[in-house]
Image (cartoon, rainbow, N blue to C red; front, side, top):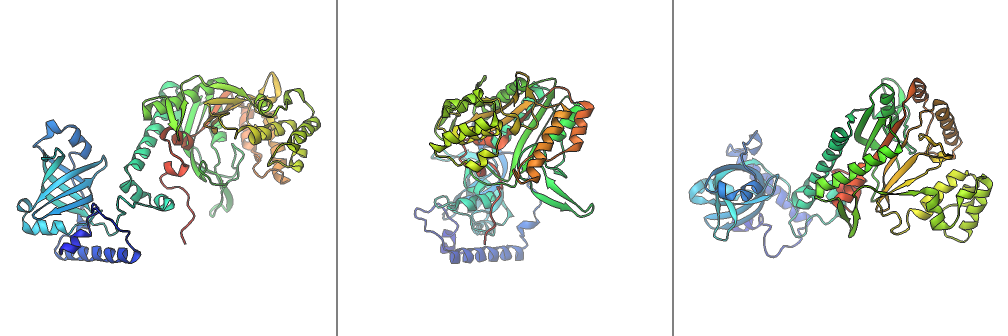
Length: 520
């Protein structure tokens, strides 16, 4: 192996030039030729099935005093190569971090050392050796044996230029995880957050984890456009779930008083920093409880998840601090509309009067709403649209954490009416950083009322008024007729919670493999 060849495997050089596609192709070919030589020598790395590991990089560093001079067996990916004649310093990266290796010719034998020098950045090695500290004070491993466990046939990006194309990082997350340790840390935190949410639900509130169908005839439990597919054997059109609410409430009807499910939901809608077509949601339902109880559950789940992942209930997201410590503030939706727009819908009962008030305000204020839309809406729909249009994006107004309550019946087909005001429901949405992170309510258990609301939603769907309206679900109505006890229900957008706690600027940063447009 020539000296020039050895330079090609060293990404730690003081000057790194951008590698062209032609050069990359040449280097890939060189790696394949090296593999053929190894195979011809009877050293095919792909025949190795296992390597017994008894230590990891960060553990060795943390416990150096007790591990100094002791033999260890480690494995990891070759990430740096510094050749100095008859000895080399290399870095390998394992699941916990990096550690330096000292490899000497007189220990391995000249033949083994020459083979070792042919290895490339990205190769996966099994290492045996003893723990020591260099003269510069770096904890390292004095290598006594090296085994190539996998030959990397691709060229990893160097640590300076890295993966420049952000889309490429999402497409090739496996490379992103290798090159950027902070990415790996984010996903480790994600796992910790998920585990803590489940722990709180199960240990502190007594919920039982269950599984419900992803495919169904009706995409119920929310107002959203579903993905559609076809089952060949049954010859029926099916939809991927947009929520798991209706199945979970069926289980409460069946006598499972507290149930929850965390899993993937699918909505065939737009994509942005907060939305991915495939996302993780948690829904939980507790018999004999109400909206206030699930507000408490929301506070505990989110605040304790933050505490577990960061050590504090105070988080910083993109430079802004949020204190998730319970209790959270509460805000009535109609009060919010009045506070921001000055229009007091509390004092207006008639739909036509509401339309006039709304159009009068819109005349003097920029709006994405149209006169035609407003003239087709009821009082409750107008309040909800005004809140979304004029309140949600007011800087700092919904920074929270805050519960927005008092949602109109028209936009809450599954929530119980407020006994004090039948125009609204016992429903809330939780906001942090002006994002909705949770939605909960006292569940509607009146089968007659539920049927009427489904009929109205189905009418809007059939007439093309709202293509995201909730379809009729006669089996769910039947379940309510069997009898659903008073129940508090909650849905939390797990991905958004994780974004906030990990300070991730985009939902794509906390999903291993986000939905991407195919490369041309």
